[in-house]
Amino acid sequence: MSIRIVPLEPAHRASAAALIVAIQREEYGIAITLADQPDLVDIDGFYRVGRGNFWVALDGGDGDRVVGTIALKDIGNDQAALRKMFVAASHRGRELGVAKALLDTLLAWCAEQGLREVFLGTTERFVAAHRFYEKHGFVAHAPDALPAAFPRMAVDSRFYRLEVEAAGDAFPTLETERLRLREIVAADAPTLFAIHSDVAAMRWFGTDPLTELAQAEKLVETFASWRKLPNPGVRWGIETRADGRLVGTCGLFKWNRGWQSCSLGYELAAGAQGRGLMKEALAAALAWGFVQMALHRVEAQIHPDNAASIVLVRGLGFVEEGCGREAGFWLGEHQDLLQFGLLRREFAAQR
Image 1 (tube, rainbow, N blue to C red):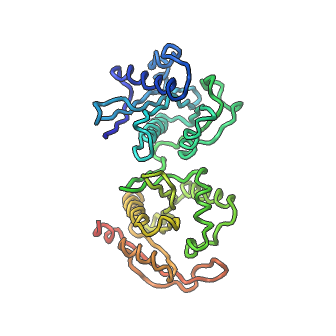
Image 2: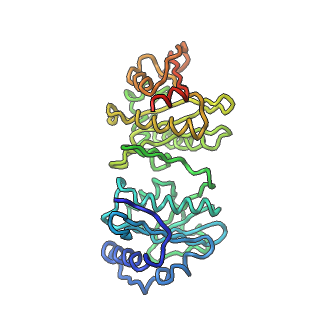
Image 3: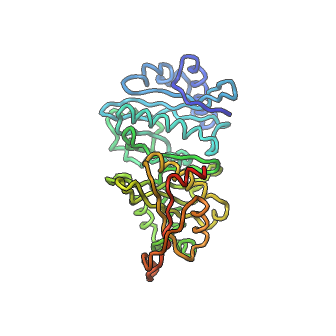
């Protein structure tokens, strides 16, 4: 299977419309035809006005069959409406990533075009769609607060809004063989709480375990705030590609631009440990940091009793440099911390 996301061309029009109408009628049970949808009858006249556009997902392994669609309607005031997002049943699922690829393409276009906000409408019963949009940063939006030009459909009852990041500021999503490192969003708070409230799993993390969901919600905000600092940091959510489950986080922070250095932090859910997932995630994060942040050195501080973490960083090329006596404080005690460092040339030598 080879998926490409491309702007709609004349040769795709009939197939795209047929896919949409089939899903609407056969899966959603909506009594609707192509003639009932003027935006599909005249896609260029409806969507390709101003900074709007229309894209299709093509499966190159199946004769470039249209397997997905997504559209953007420019509604003025640097705002747009997301519409006509459909994916063929045969091409759904996190492991295929067709829906995400469609959305990423649309949002990259929005950033390039200087659009500030994207709105969308859906129905209450499409719970899977709600989870997808929330996972990718959309937040629920009150109907009475929608822009006046938003093209509201009769079946719409639930609405979402996304603030578009400026071009060049989009979150750096990374992918490995088994993992996707992506932005941590509000919908991740319950999973983060489950990880950070596990006393045994978090005993070496460097902070006291969480006791309330509100603390996890605050943690999401904290990670997001790193991106807005004068010397920004990045914290990735570590998601398994097979099932889209969040199993931990990792990140680069305390960036000293002048010294070309930063610190490394990470944690992994107890149930995901022992499979080499964190090493895979950190290898991708470090490779990104040495290039995109022009780092020369990355540091990590680890408790002397955290044997698994020490083995992990040594496996990535980190060198033990000394011990900071009682350098940390959590769980009511001062804690010693071993200092590890990794230089860019050392990391490159292991690649």
